[in-house]
Image 1 (cartoon, helix red, strand yellow):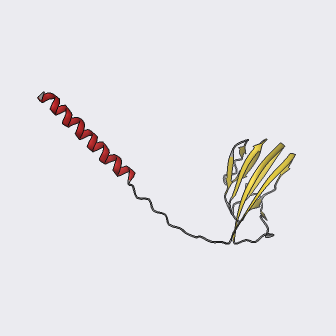
Image 2 (cartoon, rainbow, N blue to C red):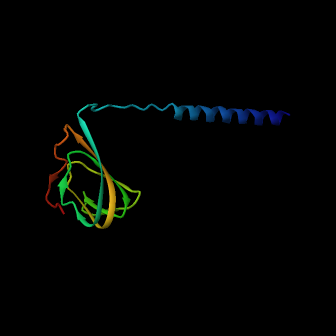
Image 3 (cartoon, rainbow, N blue to C red):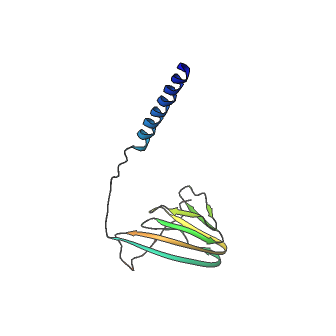
Length: 133
């Protein structure tokens, strides 16, 4: 009986320690620092379809662009000059202010979500850029 009692205290102690550790992890503090919260951001969503031989030419966007391919393959070159091939169901986020080129050899459909800071409808969504590669 005495041996069973020691095991009981050992199990109880392990449960209390585990619960305390779990509560410590669950109560981790997370902080958010809002850098900007404006009403001057414009968003544009467009679906683009090509039958092939598409090339956007090198250009720069003023804000981030989210590219999602529905069918076909889109080759996007940015940053390291190593092209990224994006296929159906895949997403690529273009970095604003960095030259980018997109190309599709065959029929491809993709959707872009463009974010334009401090922009109004009708403002240009891109500026031409030279090939950095």
